[in-house]
Structure formats: structure tokens, C-alpha cells
View 1: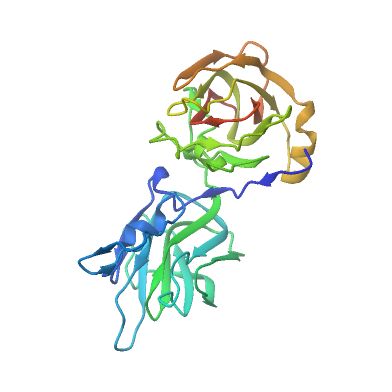
View 2: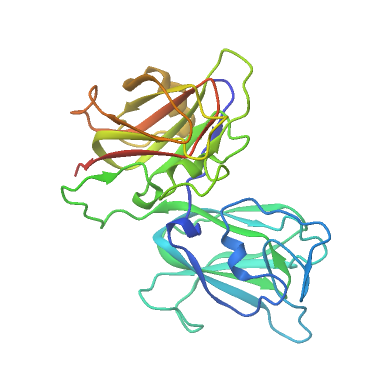
Length: 328
């Protein structure tokens, strides 16, 4: 376990949790909706539409007067923001000069005179790169406003944080504790070469093979793994391992471990200790393009807030779902 990838929490601007662009000053060259696409941006060589070069992101026309462009995103779930990524991949010469971010909490559609709070001051923006910024404000927000100066294109905006679950009452009903909709997040994994780890906790059924977690071909005796922090501590009754769309590259088998860890712990320390967690599901064979359901017989009475899925030797999973009751 010498090499691993630490999780980035949840992208609160992900449309899979209900986030959407509700206003933009202009998107003449490229639709504003593309800026929240969960997939990595792409470039289509030689492809043009009626307005010009097709670009995978939000791109405004060239301003010839004063002012600047902006868009507003309604977050699918209210939450705290820890980091943002303003990604200008493939925008070179047409990226903004500067960008800033504002945020607010409101139950109605925000307007220009809403009480926007600046969470990121004007920052210089370069071509064709990821711009990662830490956010110090720990308030809960429902909306994000991206300002670009004076105009230009941004491929993606990712808003990393945690879903606010404090006032959510699940009662006694069974819920998917490992869904990003319910506050779950990725702690880390050892590899995500072909598909991002965060896809495995997305809601609903995977759209295709790219909408899942997939590792490279290991060519060895090792195995791949991924750790999830559940949105809420609970008791797990059933586990679903979904290999939909993975037909020649699904794992041969898998196992699941689990633990309850009270208080705060760094992701690095948690990963190092995870090998000693209890088995929730012993090693079982998997099949292609199928939803596998397993009852929790080993840790049914245990309270759990972390799970680790191990896949042997490598491959791809569409989703993992852990159904149970939330503990107060």
C-alpha cells in the first residue's frame, strides 16, 4: 500500500446530485451547461458548429465594452466548500485573464442584489491547466457564482466539499449509506487509471463503462482497492456490487471490509490502518454486466462509517451500494 490516491471529497457542482446552471451572461461559443459535466474535458480536432470552433466547456463571446461575464450554479445539495478547481483544459488564447468566486445560501433564485459572499478573490488564470484553490470560508452554501474577467472559456468548474447532512432525518428507513447523495465521499484508492473513483458512489445506474471506477491491468499478484467514508454512521443490511457495462474487464472477485472510526482522522492514517478492518463480505466471484446482491451476515449488528472494497486482481465496477439504517 505504498502508492495511493487520496480522495478529493465530493464535487458539489456535479449534475448527478442535482446541480445545474441557472443563469449565465452569455454562452455564445460553448454552452454553459458543459462546465459542470462530470467527465474530463475533451478536444475535437477540426470540429466546428455554426458559431465557431466546438469547445468542451463554457465560452462567451469577445467583449467590446466594459463589464465581465459570469454564471450561477445551483448546487444539488447544500454543503461546505473546501477546494475549487477552475479548469481551462484546451482553452489556450481564449481563457479568461482572471476569475473569482462568490457563494450564497438561499431558498429562492438568487439575484444580482443577493447577499453574495466572495469566497475566492480575483485570481490570474492561465491557459490549458487546472487551477486549484483552497477555500477558507466554512459556511454552508446553496449557490455558486463564477466570475470571469473579462470574457473567455472555462472547461470545468469543480467545487469540492461535503454535503450538509446535519438536518437530514432518515428516520428508520433503509438508505444507501455509500451514495454521494447521502453525503458519502471517497477517502482514497490505489488506482483510477480508466475511471474516477468518485463514480462508484454516484446515484442511479451507470450510463456507460466510463461512468464507473476502473483500474489499469495490474499484471501481477496484487489487488486494487477503494475506501469510502459513509455519509452517516449506520448498520448495513445489504451490499450491492454492480458491474454494469463491464463485460471483458470486470474483476474476477471482490471482498468488502468495514470499520467504525470515531472522531477525526487523516485519510493517510486511515488508509494505512485499513488492512486490519473486519471482513463485511468474504471474497466472492463476480460476473460481467450484473448487479450482485449480498446480505450482511458478518457485521449486521456493528455500527459502520467506513468501508473498503477490494477487487481481484483489477478491473472496473459501476457502483457499490450499502443499504442500512442511519444511527443517531
